[in-house]
Length: 307
Image (cartoon, rainbow, N blue to C red; front, side, top):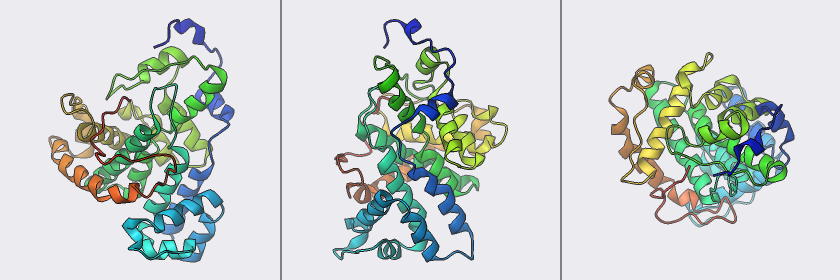
């Protein structure tokens, strides 16, 4: 905790001005909305997809790494992005590229929040799988659900980048689901990482159907544009916390109105076993070392998270 919150009364700072001041975030996430548009267009080709991925050399390298993982390679190496995409299959390209993007953006310790790189990576991937699962059950687009789940904590990365340069003594603490670090953020900054994440996704040209649910993840029914997706993200965070958090600290269920909006009243807890199965299924993919410095533990996802 901070000893004197008044020190961090920052006046004119807003989510937008903080985003413009961020220095060390790669622009790789810009690829995702463009990739989704390509994959949704019956006239696009694999060549178009490969050309887009090749625009970012680091991203292309990550895709190649994953194409050569034990999960996909079966001992046979591929040497080009084209081969990697052929190997995974056209239908799985979005997920593959999403993992690669996340490995660039979400594999870092967050000193301001006291979160290590493993925790942030695991939180993000698990929430993505939970949101994808809920999207399938609710009739929403699974790629949209997956993306908002994967990037829901992006605002924390931006705040940490900003704080390390502008307010290196800033420390933000989490109370766990549902409020997490939002109370501490409002006290110290005047806004939450959800608002920063929404602003950053908008800055990166993500559509509002992705940016707004991230922005309203703590007040999903207040989202005027896409309240159902905002509720979906909120519920995905609960599902992630219920499966991956401490066994003796079950998070409170989302409000009844949120469950009803999704058509999942009384059914959320029944989805825990399916999320656990999907987490086990992707374990070998996570072990490909998409984050070069991160060792994904063998007990994933049964880690205790602080945020």
